[in-house]
Length: 280
Image (cartoon, rainbow, N blue to C red):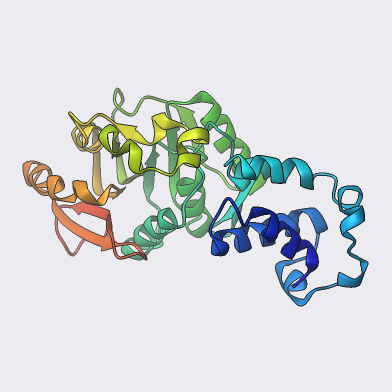
């Protein structure tokens, strides 16, 4: 392992678990050194590394370490994240795309054929879902909307950077309506009463408006989408404890539920459609 990686890992040992520190150290070292992860693991040019010259050789390192020790996510420090084969800009106006949400993208792709479809990604944030779908389904006509103007600007920049075509616009999902073949959404879904269970760095740096919903109506976004947006199928990421509430809501709209667990075994993804054998 390259000593730069070990140095960063040692610096972070007091503020994050070893596995997280190791991953962050590799990612940051990649950015600072220009070496690939494989080259860093193999220890390329390790003999040239000098702790005494580290601030000279890697002038961005001290500030990055300071911000990491304060709990700021590395994705915000670097301004990007690699996700679903795309490099996406992120900033405090957008959530950092999670590995779990990549599984929602896989669910949509697995359940729908590769043919022209109209798709809406509601509460799009960085545009990650819409762009990941477009990356795999060039024939799809995809719209992404978000209440945050800054998030929409970020999504548009991500579209340009990745040479894709998606229609991103500012809109309030709770006040609009539409008709599409597919609606997909990862809306705010954590009840405010669960705020204390959320990682402190998320609370400090990521937009709360994209995370939390009132305890009085935790299905607000899902219910409104089903009422105002007509589609052949809906794909949602949700908070696992809310799943039982989906069944009476689906029954009210005459829809069947399919549930998929995430890699941690939590029932996080829901597909609602007219029948369980849904294919467009």
